[in-house]
Image 1 (tube, rainbow, N blue to C red):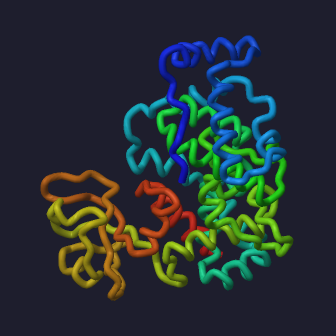
Image 2 (cartoon, rainbow, N blue to C red):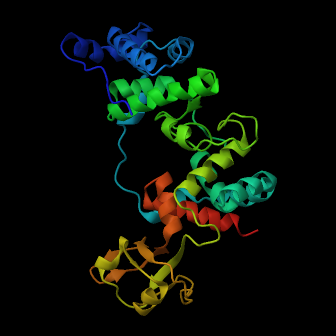
Image 3 (cartoon, rainbow, N blue to C red):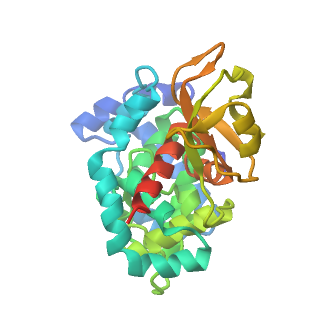
Length: 333
């Protein structure tokens, strides 16, 4: 992974502060052009062809102000589980998960069988990442990544991703304008960063090119390949909603403290529906979602290895819980 970047000092730093004004007037930013020339040199050093480089950077004059604004926007506070759940686990999302589980069955089955990954979890990630392929982002990836590599909060990371995006363009023969995605560089229906594409994008439809923008077979295969790589266990639960019959020490909460269901049952953990936990021998951890006090918690989930696999896609616990619940709903057909 390359981490070289143009260091803006002296007069170059002053030019950088005028980048937004140049963007507004349509003028090129000299500092930005110097930065792009530096990236182009690095790309050529990695044997990326000139016509590919020219295609990727065609028309880029100054940093994208919208990308910068989105990158700098900080969330106001932290969502509770209930607020997050209301936001992402809508009735529309759950209904679409069930519908797609049926309508995409013929595409899902060979992918699921090849990578030994449950179809419902593929549907769930697809649904949460891009609203079942409907919302992939409309930013030009090279514009977005170059902007963030130049002026973002994680410049080294985005510069490396920009080089990886150039490798994709060089390897697959796409047009740069076709590689659209989020302001942060996540691409296509599975919202892969370029480095993830190079590792996990899969050709599910057999045409020789993993197209995560247009081919559902490729989208599903790519998600399945990712999950398989990180240890998804087909047919095993990711977790259960639970509650308590007696206080559980706060120190036993969280991903680092794991126990069998039998041990959790003896500690007073039961299913949210009041039933006893199944006698699985898998080690599970408790993720609280309700109020946590010095004497315990009110509600949460006991989660297993498959939950940890989902977190490789996005390390937020609430994200992984939402994916698991969407998958559970998709399975109810």
